[in-house]
Image (cartoon, helix red, strand yellow):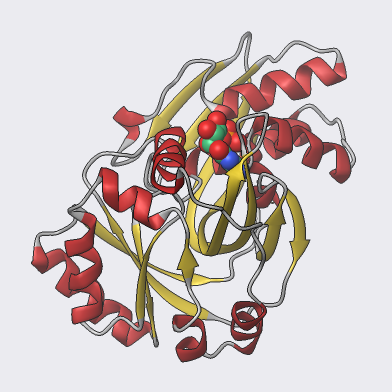
Length: 298
Ligand code: C5P
């Protein structure tokens, strides 16, 4: 018997970052938007816990217990007092270590898949608690849609969002999220970092579905840090806006860059121009919002 869960990638349309907290995490006001790039995680009964992965970047995915999918299975099994006897297969389409929460997505998907496979029927609130322990972005991967994340990003409030179209430019190699936050700390050292707050103008633009309004309000406080570690990303951002994107920003901690475009036709044009520019490895076209982790019919 096996169970498959489909789970989306995310982009942050606003990522307001506060000063480092005593626990090392940063307070955030983080407006998450799920986009239609999906991984699928299939859970199958097995003797022990194993993970496999297929897809263009599968060789960059760890298959040991550091994989959030494996940790999700372990945590759920421990809570239920059973052995994590499951094989997890990840069909990987979300860029790896790219700032699109691909690892977090697999954690949320594995949790939902194992819950169904083992017939546990864990209450949603408890699944969300496990997600928050797994990582700051994991609860949003479960929920999907559009949401404001506060705390370290794990405390979610749903927000309204119209439909938007995106192009994502995948860079060569990943960026480490902790390294980008450390660079943020270095760049802001000696300055008064304000309390992170969601932008009312951005939330109104998101709800309106007006791409020009959203383009004027996109903001990512981690972008200077990502650009400092990876200066070539500035060329990618410029190539996308030069090709007609309404706005460009680094996705989360990067190095994937996100381009807001007016419609599907413009998406295809911007993607082609980005690929021709030689400033990225590959592009993906997507729309938002997308649903969160969902069981697929067997
Ligand atoms: O929560 P998660 O395990 O995804 O976070 C990865 C790393 O990113 C943390 O160890 C921390 O260095 C950094 N981080 C942070 N503040 C946040 C979220 C993540 O400093 N709100």
